[in-house]
Length: 94
Image 1 (spheres, helix red, strand yellow):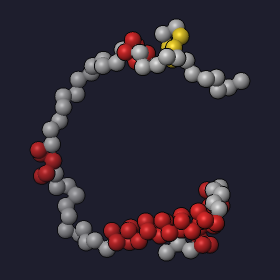
Image 2 (tube, helix red, strand yellow):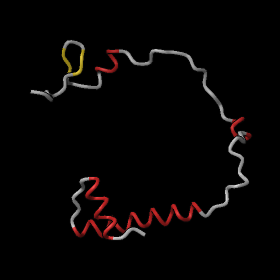
Image 3 (cartoon, helix red, strand yellow):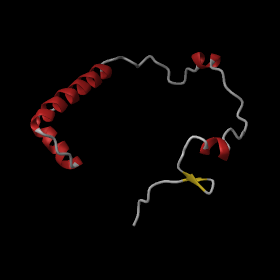
Image 4 (tube, helix red, strand yellow):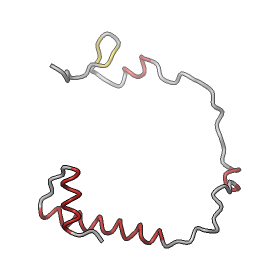
């Protein structure tokens, strides 16, 4: 279980500022996640063969062929902000 002190340490390390109302909500949600992980760790997987690919034989695979699905005209037709056959975006650096 995660305590209030642990949550404060995590917030400090991650530079998060959480108000008191959110703190209780996050603490509850995080503890739910930790409880779920604890439940998963109790499952016995010692008899599971990680190299067993029996079920994967029925998985269809597509042919890996290069193809040109997008062209400039079709991509630029999705925007009204274009100039000189390129997308126009807001200036980010001044």
